[in-house]
Length: 291
Ligand code: GLN
Image 1: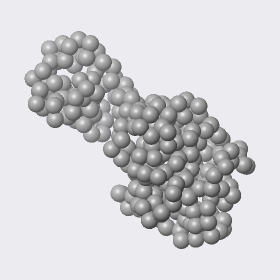
Image 2: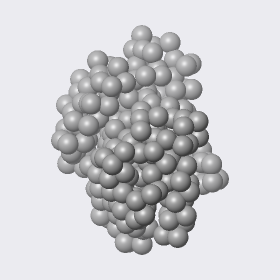
Image 3: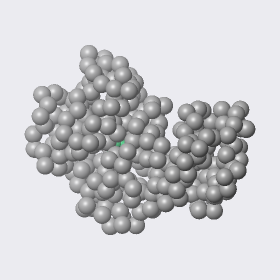
Image 4: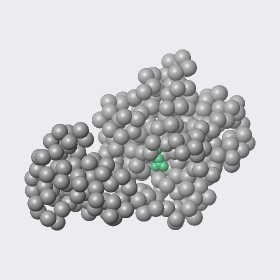
């Protein structure tokens, strides 16, 4: 794009694709397309309907800045400031983990199970809410749900609230700042049907080996600075006091954690432990019911 003559959508797509390819950015064409959609506030199809349209000076400056950030491996979602989770639009920034498709499996499973409940109100606790993806989608897709969302970080909670409002579920979610690892008593007077969490489950040793993209995300959202199991241990320990009988705890987990966490569930009086695999055939979700 150094060449000022390149300003038409189609030429920018071609240029961006080959530049990203050269810089080893995965899905090069999709990256440049999504940047253009964001700048022009249009859908991908419109890029091809209006392929001849030139970008103005201001738009080109923004694009140049996006491209510069992306080749330094900043995730596209942070650059665009948004992502999608189960079809819901969510704002993201570097104070929150970028929601992942694997986490959609966790939410879909809870939605399916909750269909069999005839409770007047289904109470769900989401631990480590981040952008609010889990809380907001559960609030949205389970009619009679009431969600309690906790997170250690104030900025994160503010973003989650903004996302809840934009998706019209702010009145169904209670947000509370809380450090779960330092908590013995929950500040809620509720017995829960579900406790869900996608906690920081990467061990500190593995964290050091991660790809450059992942280093842009908050370290506290990825690792427990320990063996990767701190949150599972803690949550299973204190959940007993606040879960209904037959209430469910459901976690997203790492590829090598299922066996150990299954035993943690059993030691803590949970039964009916189920493990669900993700799209790459990795054991990704685990859940159990309290006796
Ligand atoms: N609940 C958020 C998610 O699933 C954030 C999780 C986290 O920060 N570890 O994406």
